[in-house]
Image (cartoon, helix red, strand yellow):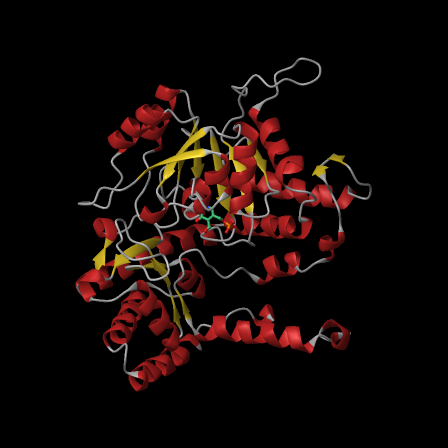
Length: 430
Ligand code: PLP
């Protein structure tokens, strides 16, 4: 009964409050989105009760006949969505996917080359506070100070100098597309493997709106919860499976393919039982992403990001690299005399959520920062379009220009709340 379902009033009241927060405000965090009701239903299902170590058809537990079909459905849909030959849908998150890949193909102490965290890279690409920087020897490439763009020739030079075993591309805050072909040339020259972490733009890549990483990168990882609009989770993919270059063999003396190394990097390498309820929700999201409606959604994400970029530029804000090709942008607030911390803390008072972010060559700490990162994936799901982006920018600018005027910010908040009431989220979200 409903009574037993919601007996824990303390917890369910918190969920109700969070639902309200998500509904009342404007969500501009570039890594967030709103999943559909059926994604939430799948994730909140009895599948959470099941242990299923192993892979479909090869489990270490009995009773896996149904979850095998669930996981196989997720695998088949992911393969179709990205046009790839092989996928592992079990990583619990993007960080887990990267950990599994590195465990599978590297030895402790091996050299890796990633995109600098402070230029927009991710912690798992070699940061000293992360496993990737502790277990492996990282070096980094970054953007050019004048343009905010990556110079692909310089990446090649860095690779030649550093001789990494793995080159990682992909980012959390880079608004431009990637030259996977040039990166593959860099990798081939030094005998490295190339990993693309497409966590942020995965949905745009699936729909062919950005360069194709699968044609050039040996391995591709992603999260499933950003532009892809699925549950929080990760994936590992191979455009084509290939013989592993490390000579690892089966007990029968056969060379194990890369897919087998990666499977064992996930389990037993870095995870235990897969989260079949999350995998079910991934299957639902992939099914949704195969639709024409989702294709239209991803195109609107880019149109909205460009409208946001134009709105900010028109008001004298400086966007790193001057614009965006994808769903996000990084704005340097120094020309406005503001910090990222102040912007984040002020905008939240108007129920506008963004995140503070380091800008390339930032002189402030990660707790303060000189920038803010803004993305269009969530507001696009909400149903907002280009003209609405102009209104969002005007609210943001208004709040930031009146950051010490609580009354003024309160007025903007009321307008935001009233506006967002016209864009209800899913009824069953609680
Ligand atoms: N890789 C990139 C490029 C990301 O942006 C993120 C998330 O922010 C991750 C990996 C990690 O994903 P998760 O938070 O699911 O571990």
